[in-house]
Length: 381
Ligand code: GMT
Figure (cartoon, protein in one colour):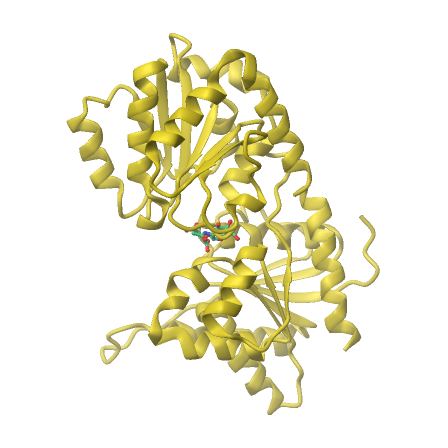
């Protein structure tokens, strides 16, 4: 990949396992490897920033406590940090991921910098729940709309999310769709890992279903268990649950009540998801809403077909009866039928190969190039 001009940029993101933080961190890492200078600004080391390399800096946002504060003023601390980094490291622009509070903080920082005769262009990437859940809260609406309109450039991760943003916020702003991406080097079929570890989970050659998420309501994790229960009646199988979150206790209760403790494995948060995907057969994503579905894309890159709901941006990633299947949100019967269909020996490799092919369209090397080109609009202005 050829870089025409080296840029110095700030990246503001959530440092967690969530998709927006993962995309922001991977984007920064690749841009740094291309020679650009990246300043991560966030409250903790991003989980995917597991090493430090040339051209990568990390600025921690610390929010001091004070007895008067019922809630810590993180946004104010973030604004100050963006101003500080922009001034001292001569940022060409800041790229913020997730509207709240990152876009609004960056817009405020831009205004402060203007009073010092410094121009800091703001690029905002909308990821999903910042529009479809948090964004729907009346309390945040005014701020999100303003932050989007005052950003210099805005991207969204799917056509669905772009339209949802226009529908909810009626924003006067051009929104460029740049989809999520995946490292095909990291997420790929791994026959050696599969041979070595599969039998630990499935000693009798059972099929393995997998779900990864933050176990929030929006993910409909209970549907995952219900789908599995139905599949298990027809096909000897196991279910791996990767991640953690508010629904976990209820899920574990369900597993115990249904005598599934030997069949459903809760693995908690995992850094090397790619190795767990490598031993799995079908990925489940029955979400209520999903702007893109990065976890599904990562599964596909490992050759794992997906059964999902046809919500949000998922139809932009999953093709019916090609790399997986989709059904209406909550249609557990259909989703379990689809899993059984995929697992039929004679059909499985068709879905698996198509999943791999689909993932190639979202190769990080292609999509990061798109971001790089997009950034150049700012520098030309
Ligand atoms: O899915 C989550 O709850 C995490 C969330 C986030 O903001 O980190 O993910 C959103 O952004 C991802 C990266 O762009 C998308 O792939 C996910 O589809 C999106 N999640 C939802 O829309 C629910």
